[in-house]
Structures are given as C-alpha cells and as structure tokens.
Length: 195
Image 1 (tube, rainbow, N blue to C red):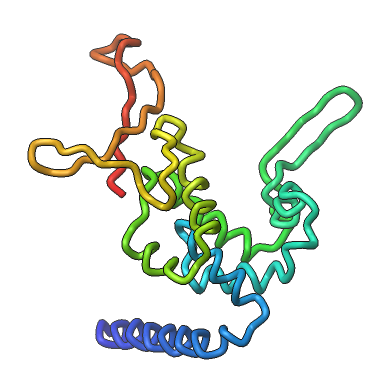
Image 2 (cartoon, helix red, strand yellow):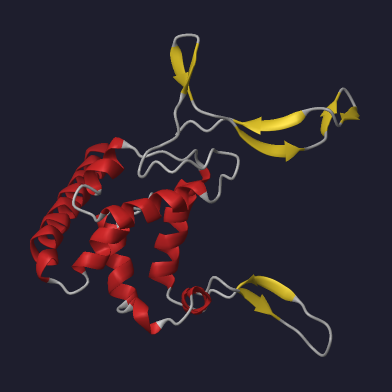
C-alpha cells in the first residue's frame, strides 16, 4: 500500500513536469506571454501562477481602476446596507475563483522582509528595469519602517550580528501581554521574519 502511494506521488510529479515543459514550449507564441513574464518579477508569482492569472483575466486593460479588478476577483467586502446604516461583511467571493486563489496565495509572500532572492533575480533577468523597480516598490509598501532608499532592485543592507547576518526586525506595535496573571504594557511585540 505504501509503495502504491509513493508511485502515485511520483506519477503526479512526472505529470507536472510534462505540463510545465509543454507550457514552456507553447508560451512564447502566446499573446499574454509578455504580461506573464512581467508578473514574474513580483514576489510569490512564478510562471504557472503568472500564466494562469493572465489566462483567466484575458485583458487587464478592460478594468478602468484596480477596484474594478478587485471586485471582479471577489476580494471586495460584501455589503448589507439600508438607509443610513452601513454593514460590511466578509469578501464576496463571487468573482473568478482560480485567479483569486492564486493571487491571495502569492500575496502571502509579502509579509516577509523585503529582499530580492536569487530565484527572483534569475526570473527577472529579461524583464525591463522599470518593471523590476515597480516590483521592488511593491515589496517596500507593506513595510514602512524599512528605509526607503532609491537603489533600484536591491534589498536593504543586512546587519552583521555576532558573525552571522541577521534580518531587520519588523515592529508590529505595542500589545499588552500577560505576565504571571497581570498585564505588562511595557512589553513590545517584535517579529523576526526568517525569509
């Protein structure tokens, strides 16, 4: 039984490799290929995600504003309002399920400290510098405490700490924490991302 499960996993990996090879062969002749290549400069978006998002959205120029695109994805809050009362609920999820799922998964990569990894650097070699700069600015936006330098496409300098590099800490603000049954408001919640 264990061997059957191992064989099933191996077959799925081979199938994925065959499909990715076919995508690599067919994609350069596709109209959406330049946009899919540009999307790969962003963190969390690799070729399969980029191809799927571009194929699902067809033409991004049809959305006059990013809010329209978010509504098409179903990422806007639902609303149950009447008169002067305004009630907003969870996201509507009435848009394109595949594109929404992939973009939300890709967005999780932006919770870490801004950096340009070797993988992203290799993916973005043939992408215009203006698009790479835009991708870098998108990484800096959720992290206002990271210095906003004008160096294009470079991560902030890392500090040396006792002989090893250490990422800058992200300050999440003050949060009261319980200490032996009482609140201690002087403690500060600090997270150190590992990526």
